[in-house]
Image (cartoon, rainbow, N blue to C red; front, top):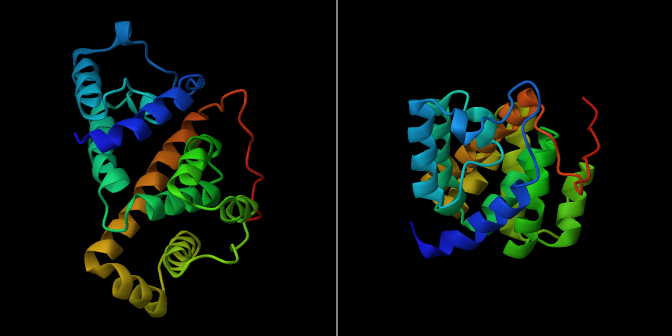
Length: 206
């Protein structure tokens, strides 16, 4: 794995440490791992250079799902055709649309560090369309929100994204939204708790 991944992974590890899965899908202690879970955990450490954390803790109850999700995230998070900064914008939109507090807690500071402006992040947190976005940010925001809310994107939205990022970029951007929706679903189902210093997102009206 490239060294450029290490700072972000370590930040996630540090941020994720205080949280533990709730009673629904409690965190499995390494001493209690089955052989299959041990193999999945070892592969996780080899790929991410940190122990199993955050959304992957409840996923460890199905280690094959956890391993496949981790592998997809290895690409979508760090190597997508839209780049790491815009991927963080899409992740925040996904966390907001799914009201996933832990996902937001982890990625909000990463998005800031990646160059997403505080006022853009604040607007997303409030459920508002940010003003003053760059053209690339607007394309990603519109594509992502439309996909989550309408379950599809319009021809105009698709064409804007394809013109800017190409067909691969459209597939990758769709994948980022889908992948973090998967993690948000798992966290919401598990009722994965927020760290004590976290601030919950206000639930958006249905």
